[in-house]
Length: 442
Ligand code: NDP
Ligand code: 2IT
Image (tube, rainbow, N blue to C red; front, side):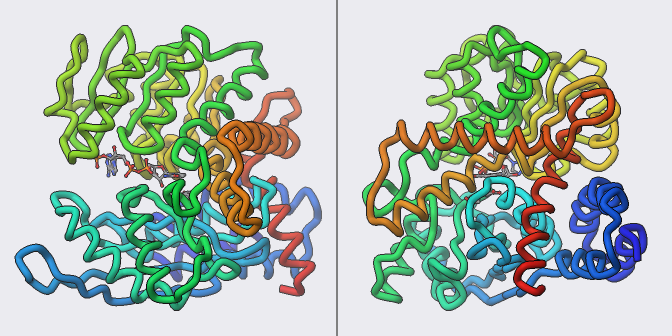
């Protein structure tokens, strides 16, 4: 058996799931040469085939009532992908694009990301094709409560611990947890990203964005560079993008852009922290960037990757937001670093261009692992009934991002002593989960 034959099999069997095929292809491009190098046995290849298949896929109907008293239906999902390292762990996404393909890609990525954190976390992902856009607060509450009346029977602190993702932030997690508590009559922290007053961890809201910047700083340090006075393009204007932008500003970098589904705002001299707060409050009121006015900033519907030159690029919105042409433009702009805050924001063409270029490229599995890492810390605090201070959590986040960087260097250093962070993250995560599967007799 070989990874080529495994990939052919996946392509044939799941030809209707292109995003899943993309993530498996990307992973096997790293895992294949590694398995050849370590003389993997037939049993290893069979175990790898097993790793590609989710342990369980749950799908359910969600029936809820809108403000006009109409009955509405959506489909809910939870994919319990791999539990070798611990309870299934990963976010919930509410977006009309959600389907089994998208959630299998996200769940598969989560396996290696969670393994890289070094914490006892298995991997899962879930969500619904529910569109939060234009919904009132009572509709969000009605939907989330209906969603939890189905999901609750499949999750548990030692079974499966969901969190947020696109369209699911602090408010939604609060409503979901409120419903869970009412159903099971137990005060167990079955979701992470909870409000601080009911079991949440300090620093979880900030963790993904901050962690991405801690990781980028480590990458820059390998070429004796820092973030100070570097210009940065950030895409997205949600949780990950805004906290990445704020940390960049704190570290002395110049954040030129933020974006949303409609286009991007660019301010050549850089946004201030106060402006990021203003954008956050306008976005939470569901405004589009096109309607948000910031002095000195202009709005465009073009491609931020092609139009805006910077030293550093942080895609923090969604999957496949950078294609080959756009990746080439980033390289031609003379970028020093690309670090993926979103999950799989570079398509396969873009990935190959970045890997072949002379720049530092940080893949999502490593760069955005800070979010799930602090989720893991929230689980520890819930289990011990002892909350930690913001300083303690931030220090642990920094340490975990440092360890992930170390792992990437360990498994990704090439003969010319450059670091291939894609190989490093894929192989580093894989080795940990594969060892566990072996030990468990799987
Ligand atoms: P949010 O819902 O808070 O924000 C999402 C942002 O991305 C919004 O600005 C949204 O624009 C934009 N966006 C969403 N879909 C598209 C699209 N199809 N095209 C262009 N822009 C789009 O989500 P998060 O910030 O939490 O998540 C962003 C990314 O980071 C996702 O890939 C997620 O999987 C990943 N991630 C999130 C983690 C977390 O802890 N939250 C952890 C690790 C990864 P608009 O405002 O117009 O909707
Ligand atoms: O993609 C991700 O890592 C997340 N959405 C966060 C998962 C989590 O359990 O905190």
